[in-house]
Length: 310
Image 1 (tube, rainbow, N blue to C red):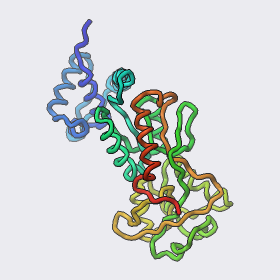
Image 2 (cartoon, rainbow, N blue to C red):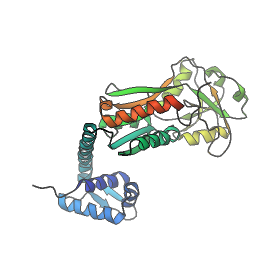
Image 3 (spheres, helix red, strand yellow):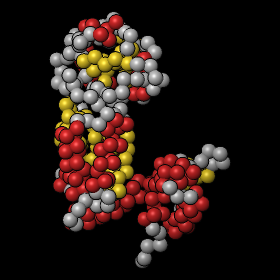
Image 4 (spheres, helix red, strand yellow):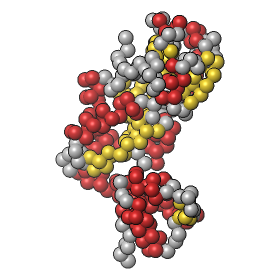
């Protein structure tokens, strides 16, 4: 029996299911809302089930059947992407789709420049990028939703290969006028009495706290946030110090106030920033091409948006 629906209709179904509304899915896919609505109606008619409950002024909600079909549709689209990837591996050059993830804290620093250089070298590759926390990146790598991810070597499961690209030591972020900002380096002991603004992301928060635990100290956490830009702004406005692993070239908070970055002396190993991929993923031509591009770019000029350690 011939198929009466298309991969494009399935893509629109997934986009609406993830976005929760046709308008948001249209913006994400760069397709007009009427086209997506028509595709959904045709898909529901062909499958003989209602995929969404239409709620006035509240977007769309998946029906129980829609939730089941959404998971299977993702698998089907993943298999189709795999077929395209296999064809690109057979060819001479890297082509086809590349689902690229990046840790959200340093995605604004490094991802656009690395991606732009890669796309200039491989114009036949279609990159889709995702800025996520470390736990989400690992989960999507394991489920096949991502081809590879730029992230840290924290709690990487054995099913994922990791290739380090740069070593990152911890830094203390302080307001530029803070008395400790003039120090050449700081130890956890120096910060014991200071309030801390914790970047509260999965795995990252545990790592930052372990820097104090290794010294037998416990920081005084005054504020928490999952947003790095907000953390920097709160530090600049005197809510406390924070910790990061990238020495950014930008010494200002989002509101324009100046920050100081001071190295933190710690007995723990530095984190490695690198490329994670599902086991054997670098055997494919397109992810391997991106890895080689990152190797060369970082070796030549260091991490984009970051200063070298002194």
